[in-house]
Image (cartoon, rainbow, N blue to C red; front, side, top):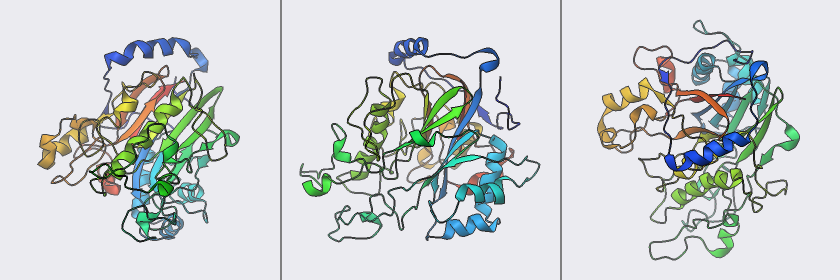
Length: 408
């Protein structure tokens, strides 16, 4: 039974796809048996989405002005997509954080609540935002250029604090007392951290700098949501892209470990070395219902990520990665654009980003990975083919919205 609220149907040009790694199937089935299952009138269907909206704007204050105007084209396009897909919970990556304005309220009032092209308005009563590491000066030479200051020496690359931030919108309330953030968690505190090294084996950062480096390029959030009698944790992040560095591969290694953070955090065995920004230690807890969401900046088959980066989560027995979100538009784009897409090994229908076809091509970078034991009904990518409804909206970003329907 679908939860009451937004009237909706699966977006055009999205289909369901499953791939079951045999080495994780047995453990996944065992975990399924251990989790409580609701049925009948108590069952609730929830649509969760993640979308890198590519609105890390060039200057501080631009996002606030765009939200207030009600006329910013790209926010109108975002509204059109959300009105079509109608997620109950959505993570927006690369949405600038500005503490001087209530971004969720302005987005609701000036964009989402306005009907467009036959689409019903929507409104999210709950939201979450918090500071991120991007643009926050570290006072250290992190990029190794011999100078201190500038976007490359921020804890996360950015021209100003809050650039490339995150915003979560939800129909359901958040348990604010149990929200956990890990923005200040040190990279060196992660066991077996992939410390950047020069080709000759020497370390890229001196020991004093390495001991202070933060793992998250933005942040890692654990947001508990109350959905009727159920509790669902949205685990939100946006790792750094594994490029824009040198032979030391400091961004690729950081990307790998930012993803690995969730492997430890969701491990049923626990992880007492993970200490949040409030000083509390430990992982999410065995048996918790969760969805890991975000732009991971890592494709399982193609691109520049460290091999196995996203595979850490896709192959974990306590995570259900069987529903591979796909679209007709992604397959069409790879065929029409050609270039390096012709040499990619991954299924183009599972792509979630559209990049330069001479150098990068289209990649699967955005994911929604639920806990094993949650009932997954369907999933998809909002990437309509030529002539499809909403096709004119997708150039709002070089990424595409990904959604998943789960039953609690």
